[in-house]
Image (cartoon, rainbow over all chains, first blue to last red; front, side):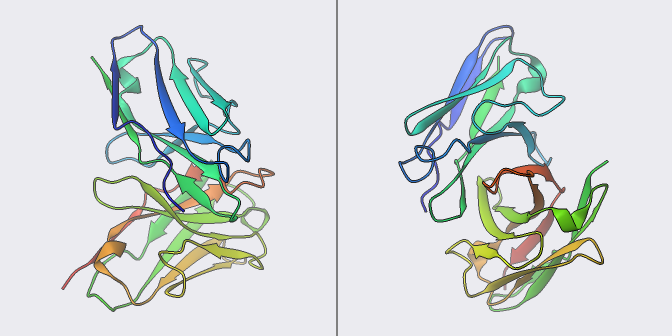
Length: 110
Length: 121
């Protein structure tokens, strides 16, 4: 199972919006509404930000939203804040009953 | 408060074995599926293994199949990963992660802080 494809890095200024893409195949993202997004600050454990494509866990800011079209999922962060600077990973369930992650995207807040 | 605490990481020689543990609290462990996920230094996340709440269903990534074993003790609220025939490419931080309930998708909601496994001679 190959990793999902994410851009290595994205950046934005405070207050702006950014979008991170996550591209898979018809055997993972395209087949299930089971995409999750995780935020990871340096030296910390990942934190769930979005599940099932576009659902936010309790306590996660409404500035974080998710979507999916075909084999590509996206995470949008609006009103960028300094504390959003982190690595972001997507994941998807697969037709092989496994979980596959993206390679990760480093978000820099300028 | 949900807590997951991994232990057992160490420096081990290639071909060696190691057993990781994950002690949990703050939720009804025997009702939840669990995952092990790893992260090589400076790299992305890689799913390693899954176990159902009863322990009857188990899945592994191809990269560890035949070398790693996952198990759980619901009486001790603990998850385990037995790693044999370790290779340099198994060097990573290993995270214990709870599967989000009723998801049917192996997605994780809570993660431990991880334990570092280094495979080197």
